[in-house]
Length: 314
Image (cartoon, rainbow, N blue to C red; front, side, top):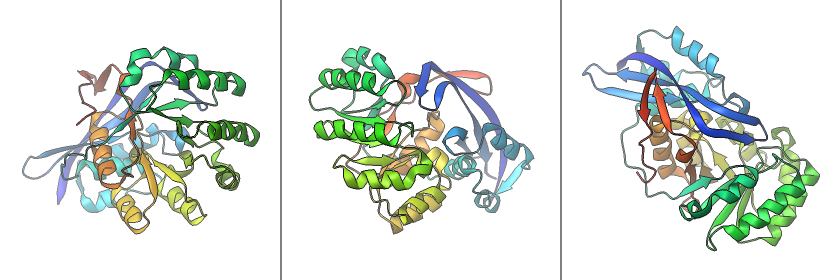
């Protein structure tokens, strides 16, 4: 089977910059790929790289698309190298059999710092929220955490995401606070940098509070490496950049891990494919980290601006 191939770039501005320990993110850019088979049926996929998270750069993805011929085959899609994980996902997922995603619960993403306290009535929207930490001073963020816990609905859970921005001592302080808030803090995500895996593993054995790996398992290769290295905690999977969906399915069916699926701030094109995977493979006890649509106002496809109308409950 061969497909006619073309692609277009897109960009979409965050409603307000997303601040993490990696810095401030203002513009989400990516590529929409277009495939058409011999009958004229059309398929779309999305390449949404995050290079500082471990994927290829947008320029590398563009270079790959530009060197492809106008007619491509399945063999060519499955031969995309591991150095281009977002491309692997974009091309393979374009050809998914369309299925309704399972009835998933969503985790919403709060603003960073004190701005999280101003969400107000919007906090009722989700039962689980994520809050980015390791952006300000530890003591200041701990004070905000206490206020945030008081503000959240009593039944709500909170995830703390450090994006690898904590020192070992700071991570220990956060985990001690999480111990005191068991039942409210679902887990702390990627407290230490990727290269401190052994220390993260040690922390997971010292505290009852759950720790999740995120940046450490950005790719399929990383996922397998951490599993082989002894990690049996939570794995946060970002399907948009982890690589080949078919290989991900196979790995998770052979190794039933404790996984949570999460967004890479993709458009509705990649989001639909990612949620389909999440419906198949995500741990049913966790909300998926796709409550992020409120961070955008519009989508752009090749210069054509469209309303961001994809509904989160689809």
